[in-house]
Image (tube, rainbow, N blue to C red; front, side):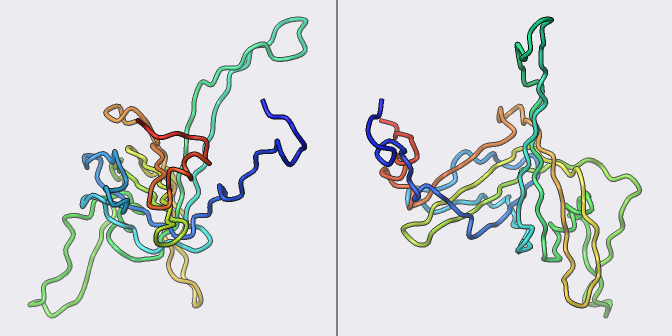
Amino acid sequence: MATGTFDEVKDHDASNIRKVLRMAVFIAPADAPVIVSLVDTSNEAVIPPEYESVGILDKDNALVATPSITVSEVSGYGYGTTLRRDIVSKNKAVAFTMLESRRRSFELHKGIDLSAVVATSVASGKNELVIDEPDRPDTLYWRVLCLGADGDGANTIYMADFYPRATISDIAAITASETDPKRYGVTLGTDVDTAVGTAHREFWAGPGLTTERIAAMGFSRAA
């Protein structure tokens, strides 16, 4: 129980307000190792070698994670309010826009595995890369790590979202312009990975996540 004036009981802490000042998205095949910890004992981020960056993200469309739920409601005759609510489904869509023209960007946007695609040989005298898209590509599943950072140096706090089983659910149009680069916008649907037991794992870590900061967030440390 708290007593006192409003300012004494409000329990506000502006230092808990976080901004994702830097962002990188990493993807890996569905059989890549599951990320169970984000940092090492020096509190530096550790990215497994199977996870590759998708490169620079669009400044205005870097990352959007949109959750949605479906609720079943029960009403009773003679009652003006709902008597019971049950969440029957919960989903999350993750969308981001890539600026770099690179293999991982192409694979996500086209929904195809390009590991077998190679450019023409030096001996051919031609510098050329050819990518054929199938009429109906297979459904590819990925592990996705969205790594954000706030603060610098010893004050750095990592905020990461790990989606162990994600697949393309929508893609954005690619347009040509004198002023804008090619952009590869994708939306991924996320599913529960039964081996992991979740569809979404959230990490807070880094040198800036001190014992005092953890307490300010309302958590305690393990013994």
